Length: 114
Image 1: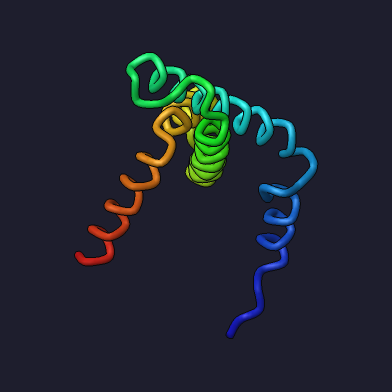
Image 2: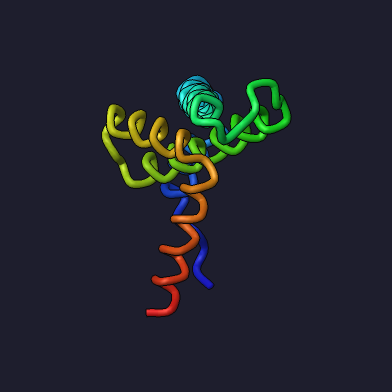
């Protein structure tokens, strides 16, 4: 097995998702996704699909949305997607929450079968 290229290793070490300089944009994207999750919960309450004071469901919605938004952010960063489109994608998938996870699972399953 060939040794990793030192230039590539250095670039990864300087630009990875857990590097301090990437912390602020990551936190912003998590916040956007979490707010989108809270809005999704509000929408469910307005349409009678959730109780207004169900804090467990609200926290679950926010955590799920933040997680999906974070993964969306990382995928967009990896694909060098424009920052504005990345923010929009994070907000949309954050609002989708668990549905975004389900859609991604289906897409991956279809790709692995073909």
